[in-house]
Image 1 (tube, rainbow, N blue to C red):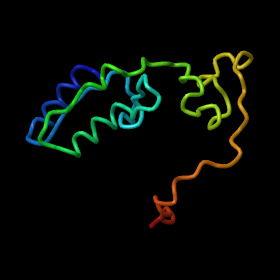
Image 2 (cartoon, rainbow, N blue to C red):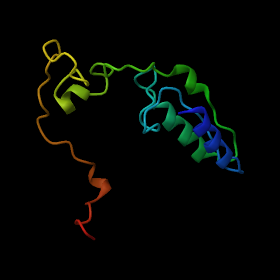
Image 3 (cartoon, rainbow, N blue to C red):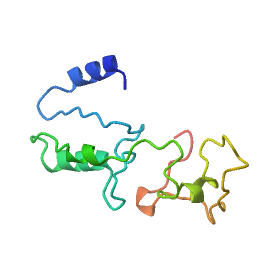
Image 4 (cartoon, one colour):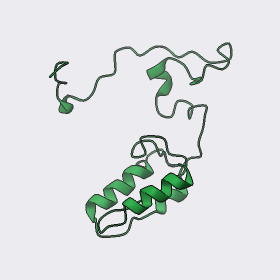
Length: 123
């Protein structure tokens, strides 16, 4: 995030109960896409969100920011099941001869039943 955009965002989130926290290297979905060095730990963004939900008046516990995995443009290997989802270990397909091809998923990935059905188009 550019410095100007951070400054604007921070200025709009300065009221009681609002927080602005930069999570270095996090992707668009910071809540889910801020992986930790401990594979069993919740993503840092999720930890920040849950902390806020437990007590919106407290300042955020930024401890998780020190345990973030560095950005890995090769896709973190198979840690997050990427090969099973997209069928390759090479997210960028820069060298398809070198990329190990994974088996395509055995079944389509579907959202949990608790999400409910999507409304028909146009409604």
